[in-house]
Image (cartoon, rainbow, N blue to C red; front, side, top):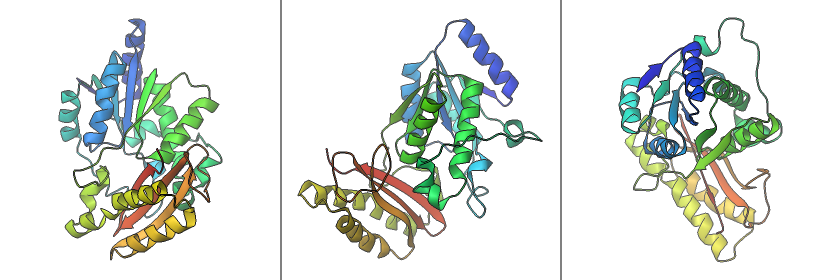
Length: 281
């Protein structure tokens, strides 16, 4: 396994691989890998001849006062996990390599970026789409894998790839959860023990919503009211958003149907966690 830190070297490795007729699979991350990331790498290993993992904590997707400085980083640990997972190349650039002096170009996807995380984190998705488009141009994968936990991010990237005619297959992979139901996230390490227990209300809320929908309680406002009450009962919880939306448009729904997905973003102290799940089927 090789760790590459410059765009020029990464592009040379890609050029060499393509000259050999190799298929490139790609998993972009911000590092501090967990089992969810490893599941992407496992599938990526099956999908391509050359498996590339990027590790880059992207400053342009963090707003003022967000947790850019606190975001966990451990490249040595990540490299060990990546090698065990069959990664061929880790692309781990510095911010100055991705955004050199004079950088002035950004990618915007309109519409679905203005809802949910986009509404509460202005500029976030411009940072995401910009860095992902740059990474796609650098790595030139035929396949890229993302986790379904970042449901809106996955929808935005699929829209960008479609709109810009990028010849890349986007694969969404299932959410990985801890044994107690908490969705795996690199940010979980920032929770106190008490907050970690309180955060279990997210997976419990998903289960409650699915149960209500399965027995015919399909009024979205009633389901949301029930969930808000249980989440707000947690002393360190602060709801960012809690919505039932159409899985493709992400527009809010009034009644649950087969396209309904529950999307949650909740702060526990300073740590913001997201989760989601389909309500029927």
